[in-house]
Image 1 (tube, helix red, strand yellow):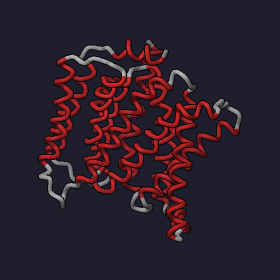
Image 2: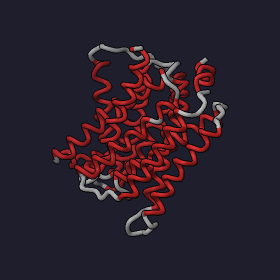
Image 3: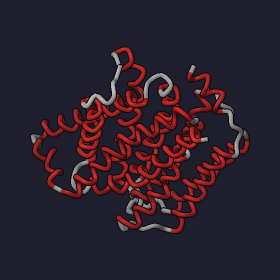
Image 4: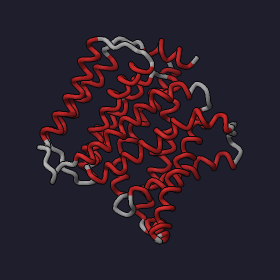
Length: 310
C-alpha cells in the first residue's frame, strides 16, 4: 500500500509547487525579461543538481548514445514548456494561465490514444468535450476584448500545455530506461545550456551583458528565482519523473489541474489579481471533465504502458 502511495504523494507535492510557480514567475518578470528569468532559473537548478554529484552522493552514467533518446524529452521539458509558459505570462494573468493549463490531461489522453494506441470509452470522450467546453466558456466570458484578453498569451500557454502533454507520454518510456536522477540531471543541463546560450547571445548582440546580472540586486527577484530554480524546475522534474515511472501518464497529468486551484488562489491573494465568477465556473467544469476522463473511463493505459516500457 505504501508503494502505491508514494507516487501519488510525489504527484501531490508536484501539484503544490507548480501551483505557486505562476505567482513567482510573475514576480521575477518585474525585474528581468522572460528569457533572462529562464536562464537564471535553470542556472540555479543546474548548480543545485550538480552539488550531490560533486559531493559524490550520486553517480551519473550517460554517454552520447544515451543523449539522443533523452534530447526530444529535454526539448519538450524544460525548453518548450517553460519558454511558452513564461512568454505567455507576459500577456495573461497567472490565474488565467493556470486555468488554460488545465487542458494538459486532455492533450495527454489524445496523444496517448494516437501514439500508444489506447482506446477511450464514450464516457471519456464526453468528459474530454466537457473540459474543452469549460475552456471555451472562459474565453467567451472574457468577451474576446483586446484590452482585457490576449490571444497571444492564450496560444502560448496552450502550446506550453501541449508540450507538457507530449512530455508525459514520452517520459513513460524513458523513466523505465534511465535512473530518475540521470534523467532529471540531463533535462536540467539541457535547460541550463539552451536558455543561457540564447540569453547571453542576445545580451552580447545588444551590448547589455551587465543587465543580464542586474536582477540579482533585487532580493525579491532572488527569492522568486530560487523558488523557480530549486523547487519549480529541479524538484518538479524529479517528482514528475518518479510519478511517471510508477503511474500512467493520464493519471499523473490530472494532478496538473489541481495546481489550477492553487494558482488561482495564489494569484488572487498575493498578486491582487481579479477573479471573476466565470473563472470559477469554467475551472469547475474543466476539472469535472478531466477527473471524469481519468477516473470514470475504462482504464486501458496500464496495458499499453507495459508494452511501451518493454
